[in-house]
Amino acid sequence: MHIKNINNNKQPRFFVMCFPHLGSLDNWLPIVYKMSSLLIEKKLTLIIPDANTVRSFHKDNSVVSISNNLFDSVLLHAYDDVWIEHKLVFDAMKWHKNNRIFLRLFNILNRVIKRRLFYYFFNWIILLLKNMLYAKELKINIQDLGRYVSNVDIMFYDIHTECNQNYMVLDMLKLFKNNKKYSLPHQLSLLTFEGRHLKLFNIANKNNIKIFMYAEFQNKFYNARYGIDENKMHIVGIPRHDRGWIKIIQKEGGRLPKNFNDDNTIVVLSLQVSNAGLSFEQKTKAIENIKKIFIDKLNMKVAIKLHPTESKEKIFLSRNNKIYEDILGLDNYGITWIYSNLHVFSLAKNKRLAISLGTAVSFDMVSMNTPCIEYVDSSAISNNMEKYERKLSQIVNYGFIEGVSNYKQLYNYVDNWIVSNNQAQTISTNVYKKYFPKFDDVLTRITTEILN
Image (tube, rainbow, N blue to C red; front, side, top):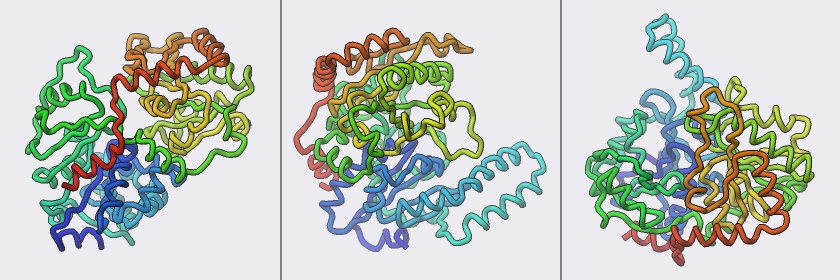
């Protein structure tokens, strides 16, 4: 058992927290990969506090396949204070796939019990399900895990996780309150004030935390939000945009089907319907218009990259989960459109255009010199127009990519794009260089800082 052997010597074990979704692992992996090549003994543990995160893990995604060969143990939170340890990421994925219905039932029954409805009857059912769920698995509770975490062990995470109310995340962080922690954002963003007042969030032993930032202007954010001193913040650019790492991702990943693996295919960077800003009506209208222009008019194909929070493994699919099937047609799947689980670096390679529905993955497109446009339709009628009134994302406001908000604007953009897309891409690249530095061999610089 890997976890029990942690304290056998004074060499640190490195823990990577994959939370709140796969994006955290995606951003940390190039650093962990590089660091692993410099370590004599590999001692790496992946922590997954929310089992639902595994729904977005797919074997043909390079991040997942590389992680499977990189980590020597995986801790996956199952239920209550129980964690399951696996040796491989693929094993954790298999366990989740085989038990996802049980996990879903746990959540439902737990809500019923909290309401004191048929408490003893449903509690008995939960005990029975637990025995089935953990029958052949290696169980560890949070108290036992605390005895195996050494004070020399190191945590890689996103400091924003400290604010999360997930009790398993908080319990895990308590185990590392006296340990060194390194922070890297779980998603690509500008992290600016934008006129907001940030309330200071106090973190215990924050002097043990070092922040890796994408750009210099972000230090004000971390200082105001968490009270982190400037000497604890390091500007590294965006590590996952290291050219060498992009090539590794493209080499390790799978490929689209042959009839989609050309420049006659565009990429749609999807976003889940939520109260945060993208309504069902807006997403529906956008997909309808993308179909009209690219599939019906230009006879092109569409490859859809789902956001990590979107999932196809739910027991019951709501209308939000069937937008693409309903509009693009199940009969046309694999002919004119397709879902792809490939990493975006592999998916967008040699593609002529990517359309973002509002996701920060647009930054990846700019780094790859792939033309990208943000499209959130403001002409769609929503039940709450004020809540979903179109607001350009930071990525558009700062000039990284262009933004359109209706069919006519998208049509005009495509007209210009067909003639020439080089000018827009040159502007995007120049804006990127203005805000985010690119350092030679940045991964070596970061890993050297950590290992020293």
